[in-house]
Image (cartoon, rainbow, N blue to C red; front, top):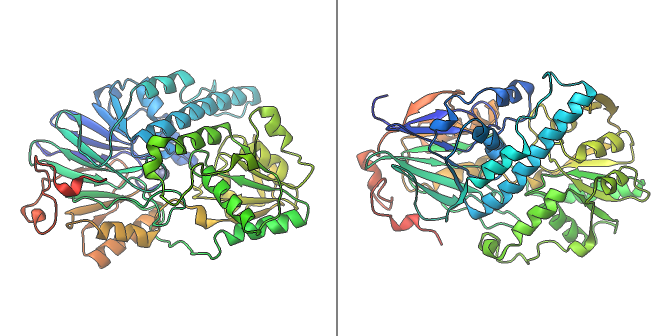
Length: 488
Ligand SMILES: [Zn+2]
Ligand SMILES: [Zn+2]
């Protein structure tokens, strides 16, 4: 492709997980996100494949946010030779530390259990990476400011802007190569317009190439009044029949929201006063990050800090306290990670709580195909846990309102806010139907070129066309920082 900078879709193409986008120019390499594949075995298998280029040849990694499907392969990249910086916002750095330590611990524990139980396909069962690998990766973190261009590599400048998805989450606009340079905007994961805790995302800046997520590219979220009524109703029903409610929730960004919602329901008298347990040490650590004074500007001004009144919440810190929750003597609500029940303490709670018809499980976010959460959402009657099947007799309820992803309308309105039409939009980070549906809307409603790239596909990144700098559009690729680039 000659001297043109190029972009390769090394992940999150044809699937939601495994975000990895490689930008190359004049002998340099930059990776946007280094995510883990999650869900179906066909995808998870790729976590064990060597990285398509030598990790030692990558100059720098940029992380859009802390979620495992964007950050979770980083320790492996470092173990396999990457020695550069990992640039991200302060909030993302703080949360990703927690996420990677936990991921390494689970990897080590699962490998040990598989060795003991003999259910691994690897012989001997090995962790994808160790706690030591995660610590090495964390040492390479570099927190960067938002709203201003930052030099991240020789010939590459990046601007991080809040994406309103989880604390610290950002869209990244990249300028690479010799001036005027190619510009490419990565949406990262975009939040909803009305996040209960975070400020709304920033407006996108102009770029010749746009890479947009499409998790909910074919769906719009319901607007429920009062908030979370199906959840409240499930709690009332379950407690009335003497059961307990299990809420699998992502520890770093969903547990706060679940507790926030539960406390509102209590205040409004919509649910009975039953004990609430947070069974995730990681969730409590993440809550501390949300309370950091330096990150206060990311929160909505009307949200009181602390976000959650912990006097009201019982924490299960030790494994013994966690086990005790498997057979509660009185109805209670247990919030535990992980959110798709792929690992973590929630798995043993499922094993004990699913067989009892009095209990309920409330799912609180996107459930990737192939996960236990997805199987429950799709009405599975049996679920495989630790190599054994358990019957699903408990009631399963889905609370869509906890989604922290923009829906199809919100994705289109983010694109509409671009100051100038891009030359092309690549639609990634979706199941095939979701990506296809969003691409179709971009073509018909915006009249733009929209492409769903194939996994592994490589495309040229063009310099800004002459007509892009018109009207109120920032001067793309110019050496001067346009005022629109600076966000308070
Ligand atoms: Zn995410
Ligand atoms: Zn994601």
